[in-house]
Length: 338
Ligand code: C5P
Ligand code: MG
Image (cartoon, rainbow, N blue to C red):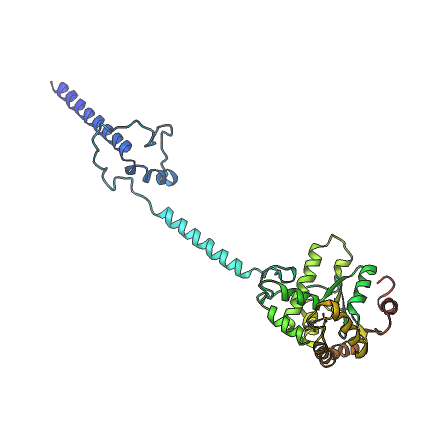
């Protein structure tokens, strides 16, 4: 008798248990929000993974149970509560990575800017602790080419380029290109200086030259001779340009100075002005350029003469004769085939 009562009680208990299991399953199908929110988090971080990975727990995969009345929500804090420590760890890692990234960007050297190559970037980079000068005279040869306006610097440079494979960089040409570059912050200043024969602040010109040299070297085929030899024409026109360039860009090997009387230079410039389209090839600008040359640029030539780094060439004769003289003097100074 006692044994039969015991069996009955046991059966009732089992029935109650199966009813409760069915109710919970129906709840999961009709109200997915009750289960899946906590489920994935528990799968990722729980030390007790699902013991039956093949069981179908997808709330959308079951058939509709619209005939069942909506069951009550499961009790809260019943062992399915969301754990917060994984989120705290994630936030800590993300914050650390952000701080590291910010610091790294601040320490990165300034990108070579695109001022001399026609881009829209800022010409002058922010101050940096980069080692100076940018190029070693062991790898790069720099010859400065000086002379009054109209002395024939450009003409002689073109001949040296075609015979000896130099790269010709004219400071005046780079300034005119920067003046025309859309978005240049120095366009108006350069325009004004050129018109009045005044010297553009040296930071601008030195940076343009450095950019142009870097771009030439970067884009040259490997082993190119001309990429490492520069004729820098119309520069330095003032002592501060000379000192700054040799300090931060590259020490120059020598100065090629084309010496020409003012009357001859004026005649050439007035002739050139008929077709050049230059804003400074007119009588008034020419007069100002001569004064600047005597007062500001000749002291640069004298500075280098004292150091024995000047090759002086008379630029009055015809271009052919001037070139012959130039070549002879360069060979004497630098050696055959320089
Ligand atoms: O050499 P070029 O005659 O083309 O130079 C034209 C003008 O560019 C100069 O008169 C001057 O206003 C400016 N310039 C400069 N510094 C240089 C070269 C040129 O300010 N080193
Ligand atoms: Mg020129």
